[in-house]
Length: 282
Length: 248
Image 1 (cartoon, each protein chain N blue to C red):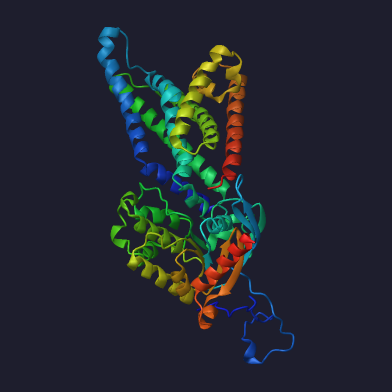
Image 2 (cartoon, chains in turn cyan, yellow):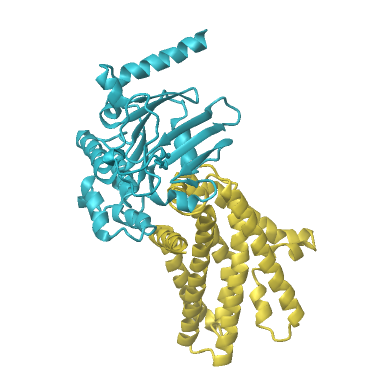
């Protein structure tokens, strides 16, 4: 899968300063070759948000996603996963830290930063007096490249093409989830942020979701940041995973590296959560 | 700019697809017709010319005092507190669209709806007067059109007040109840505080009458226009300040 890295490998890539982008093994360059840092798709640095009147929120969270990364965000209820996604997208204001999307500070240039981002945050909520088609048309207006054919294509992918003229009011929770997923991927974004995307999905829906993410990541180099409790789903999909607990990002790991070492994401997660519990107990 | 336009068109469609907006539109057209028919029927009893050349202005007085403020309250409630309550405001916030663009697109869509409502009302009342056998002459028609255009400005100032107030609510019904109470209080306040109308955009709902009378000094019209403009800008600016800080 594109963008996968081995455990403990730094998130740097070798590139060529002359801009020709030739692989390092071509041997046709001088010693002036330098290692430059690839522009991250998403860079979160020291992000902090504490809710008034409660100890909940997130503290000093930093993470980085590059092209093709599929990053799984794990953590117990109330750990701050949705808060992190809301801060990245600007739904709520941070107390400190920065969010950079495609090299652009999101708090300063929201329009530019969000131009290549698809989102599905918290529950799938819609103006339910619209039909699925009317809702997608609303999203499509912001992206001149999105045609009616593309709208049909995404509705077909999520299995809602046959009900596109029906009002969302009559949709089940799973159908609404599929529509939210369709809207998130509609403009072929370079980064997709998904919060509990498989909630309410049936078996076919879950399989469709998995294959959609695999295809977009491998063929289009789309990066994903997925917050979910479905740990086995994430193990199958993600190249990297991070555990958010008590508002802090405890540890990040290369999922394929874990699997190669005979471990599972679940073992890794439970170990980290227990460690946190022991620390709190001490 | 294409993104602002996209947001504006989306807001217009959201208004159009709402059942209550359709019902408001239909009743707005029917009301003058019903009034005209009833007044015509009562003409022998009243012994007066019931539906005359002033019918469009009489109806405008009723519309700007009651009907359009109610329409504005409903629209504002749906566009702001209801979207917070139903968690659909986040859909706009997640698009590549600044909050300033979202806010101005909503306000512009509301302004468009009021303009369409006034245009419809003007056309229907003109037709009613025509069918009643008292069609308006060119000068009367132009004067009535001027009054309708002036009414649009006062309704926009009222909309700014409602949009500002709506930012403090998370439920549409709570906002509508508060809005009705606020509007009634602002209409009654001049009976208790004589200087109140000078500072309240709510007291200008009938300011279109100023544009019907050629005897009104130009200075008075300019002062009133500037007051409406400045209060619109002030309340829209305060409303945007609150909207920009919304966390959803």
